[in-house]
Amino acid sequence: MPAKTARTVFSYQRAAALLPEVRQLTEEAIARVEEAQRAAPDATREDVQSVVAGWADAMQDRGLEVKGLWLVDFDNGSGYYCWRYPENGLAYFHTYEEGFRGRVRIQ
Image 1: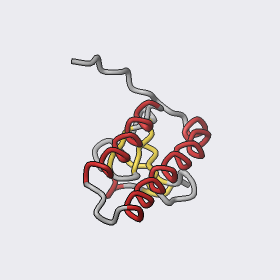
Image 2: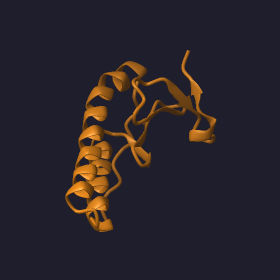
Image 3: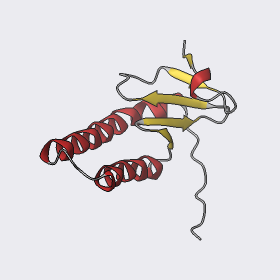
Image 4: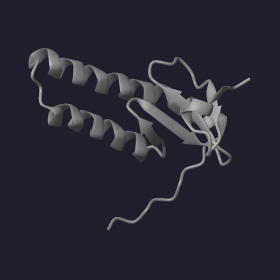
């Protein structure tokens, strides 16, 4: 059983600085999914899942928590900065308990 990695805690500045890379990796993964579907309209579920799993691994390697398709959270020690593609910036926060539905705009 693999060892659990220590959680990464992000300041807003650190999370915002990482966001352009996160967005680029997400856009590249989306493009690969779309290309696979164009090239083979009957692209297998496994093909798409492989791209999504690679994206999720890349996000986790950067210390983010994947919460859904193209949706990641940056743990800030008291909750999460929340980003979902195609949002332009890191504009939302939610507590550990509330999740995505409880997210509020960062002032």
